[in-house]
Image (cartoon, rainbow, N blue to C red; front, top):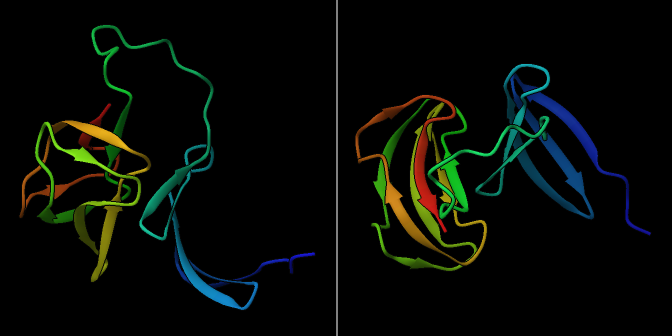
Length: 130
């Protein structure tokens, strides 16, 4: 049976998680009911009630958004590129740390909505995948 994770707050919005002999840092932000966590190059969000489907964008399977205010320091893909799960799509810089944004699964890049040097706000759509 796996050990229960030990979670320690180390700073505002930053937590050290120790589990199965490994230690990682998880960043958490956002208001109650709309929290996100940044861990291992991925963004996780609390599910909110389902919204009405968007019209006119049925071909887009997923939009990757900025998890926090950040500067885009590297864009590693362009529209039409095929990507594999775990590929780094772009790199953000926030709180003096580089935050790689990785592909959540195999996909094709539909559009890139950011450029290097751009300051982006939370929930800004950075890349659309299908």
